[in-house]
Length: 97
Image 1 (cartoon, rainbow, N blue to C red):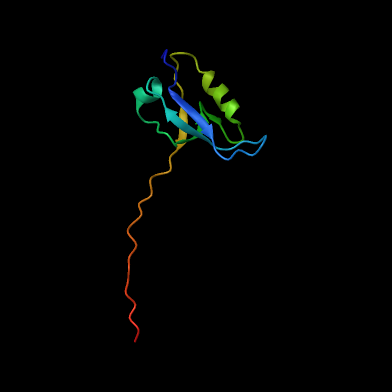
Image 2 (cartoon, rainbow, N blue to C red):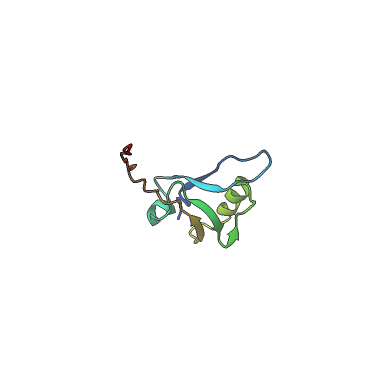
């Protein structure tokens, strides 16, 4: 729609002049992402419209996302790190014999 895609992206730990994985930084209060409801902050972008993002810079990914026509559909493949369940540490008494 006219509000755009409705999310921002970031890369983490980028070597100078290099590329690094691209993540969803924020879901904006307006736009396609919040209306759709599936994308979450922290999701890693793997593909945009079938284009593999491996080796792409953040600027290249932004350009790819912006090349989508207003009102058009964007296909995103993402990887989501599920929240890890940490059981309480089990404490055992070790008795000396």
